[in-house]
Image (cartoon, rainbow, N blue to C red; front, side, top):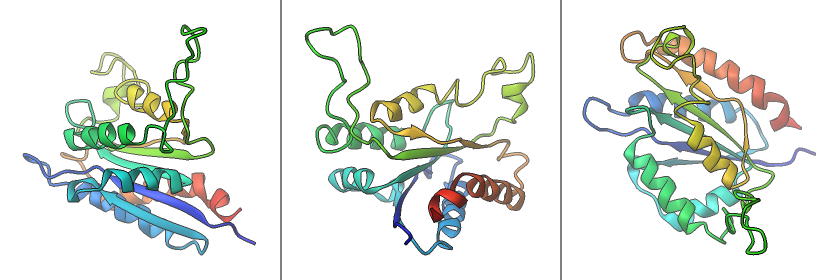
Length: 204
């Protein structure tokens, strides 16, 4: 008997300045299409730019087995609307399912910081989209000094999820999407990434 899996997809794409949010909308649709082929899967989507209820978002995090974030990267950080969403939802989630405390006690406040999360057993994945080419992160002498997206710009994002006790799944990063985007190729490679991660676990 298949056990129903719950998937929460969070689309952080925004319409701002020269960005329309279309690329992350396409990623979100690709993710939804991938999961729709499974019988024992229920999917909920939050499009941050369309507005949200903070309490309902907390309930979604508690409900989900897997949280999948889709975000562009603006000035080497997540967009302002996504940061606002995180600040609001995670704060409202205090003692309501996201985190109970920072994990420390008054007896020994020097240890156990970041161990008060309440989302144990749940996993998350993030995709990012960049104007920067992949070589900016990997090639000696290039801009990011051979520091990966996950170890560099997303370091704080990953610790945020760890603070809530979420387990990290391999990320997927879309590069050079402004000057050299090949949407069909990108979505095909991303779908293969989803298959490698979820094909067996969803059907288990």
